[in-house]
Image (cartoon, rainbow, N blue to C red; front, top):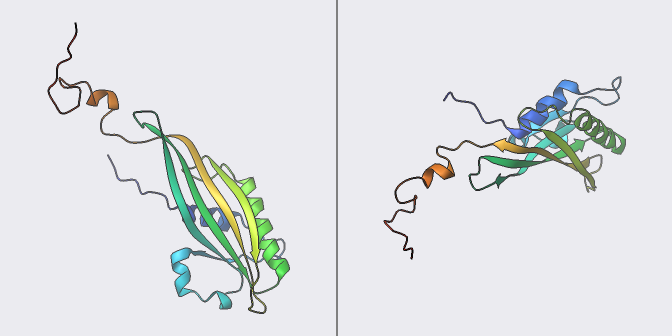
Length: 170
């Protein structure tokens, strides 16, 4: 089987927003896109507008005994930062939300993108505005690779239990 790289959810969101960002005639400049671990090397107080993508969790719920399919949910938090104004922070949130609703079925490897909630944080730093937007990437019934099927494991002489046994009937 050939190697296929596992998609990085944060990068998928960066690529989507970067591709379709509309500056609204220069009123909403494209922010700097930063994946969380890269943020350590970035001084957010000196970059202007920025969106930091932070993976919160990835969960899989298996379906059936054979677990041949699963439902996937990936949660990503977007941290929106602006040095311009409170209005710019809300404009960043609005354009992000617009794109996620518009392209809710366009992210490779996922069936749907859900925009969750937005929360604005207050800062004691004058001239700095920040908020969080929560996003979920979801897929249902995704085939999962298995080396053997459940039914195959129990088809041997000992029914896959690892011991020799004989049923007593009578």
